[in-house]
Length: 304
Image (cartoon, rainbow, N blue to C red):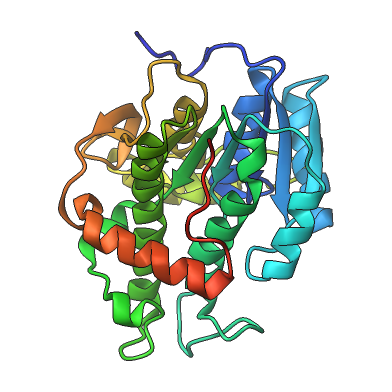
């Protein structure tokens, strides 16, 4: 089908949880899903920012159904408590992430490297504990194109030996994308109706992103400085398109990878080949097993 990013299929009656839906790309995923008629749950640890995001969405989509779910992906007790607050769900967009830009290496209270814990382990536990609600839904995992440039050692998933912030971030995103593909394999083996789809947003800049008051306002200077980068990159509004398509397109299939059409960094969403480490089932299975051990989630859970 021809996909119109500005007119996605209607989604009345659907409820979608968007982690990190209070800011950045996650906000625009939430806004676009709300615009299609879905009820959107903003998974966020900050109620104040979630309230601003809700105001911004309502300003663009009058009558939108938006609510906040307190969720700190770096704290597994918070993840479990959040799951108890949900009784119906048609899709979850695993979007939230932390990107540290300088040392030192930081850990959560549980002793897990912060980016790996937030970007991957929290989502692994969230989906595992949400399994009963997603028996006929979709799990959309948002990775990063930077994940394609790193390798992952199952014996050192948390970068204890060679921590460097950008590399550790990319590794956490690679782990999360491997989870999405491994989840699809397990769903297919179990004969489940649930779809697991992996996406990435390409390259996005705040300076190319339109204002969404009261959540965020872009200055004229910020926009002018970002214009040259617009030849290669895009706005966070456009970067949300692959995840929105993965949630709403009836032709999307489990195990697919969706990203921007132009060199994987900008443009309308398109299906991409799954290559390199992303296509390694042995590595994905090892990440799955380690993640189950670190989170205490049953490694054999099924969404059937």
